[in-house]
Image (tube, rainbow, N blue to C red):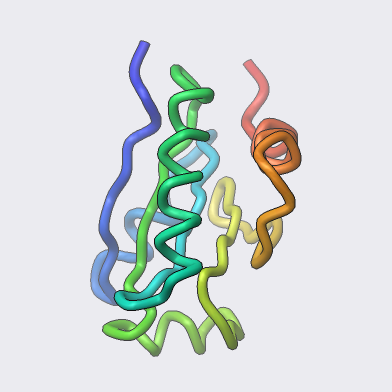
Length: 114
């Protein structure tokens, strides 16, 4: 089994990486350089990914400073913010870290069923 795949998205690649995958959870991480909370979340994200080995999901990271149009497209006002998509549909938004177990629960609840 492998860890969920992580991609860096741009305005040009976002739709292909996020909206087109079928039967796969896509977690979009809007972050920015120099954002202390983004660094904290990035470390937590790596730990979460190790827990989700073999899951049908991918993580797509978007630098919100370089791709402001994507942040505006989804009405984001702060970073870090995580959006959850499956089959091209926005399922939810998380912008606070409530702890490891909460995040794992939210992600597992949205994973495609076998």
